[in-house]
Image (tube, rainbow, N blue to C red; front, side, top):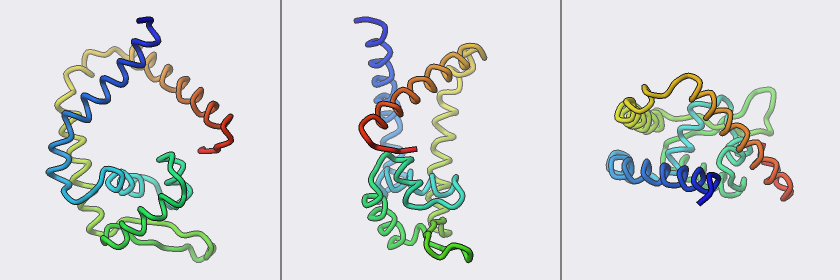
Length: 155
């Protein structure tokens, strides 16, 4: 196996292990909520004036799929929609108090997982971090260009 294959397989293996390790605790703590719903809640909390277009771009989903998910989240009482007084056309989302509870549970779990994995990150040098981040940035930009070639504009 060449180094490119090793990197790709390494990313996949790392991701799968993280998902597997975190899955039970996430599912127990966030019963009744799909992963996509929880991540939508997270995005809305962390990004001011979230709307269907921004969510679709972030999650690489269609606006129709995001509209369906946000309707479900509104129905569950986790988010609410609003409009700005200077723009009655655009609809934005924000968390309700109940949505903030789900967001907090999710954030606390992420903090717990980071604490679990802290020992490995403490061993990484600043140069290694910079190198990894540079590679991730280049690879993401390459994939964005490939997606754009398909006629899909996500960003």
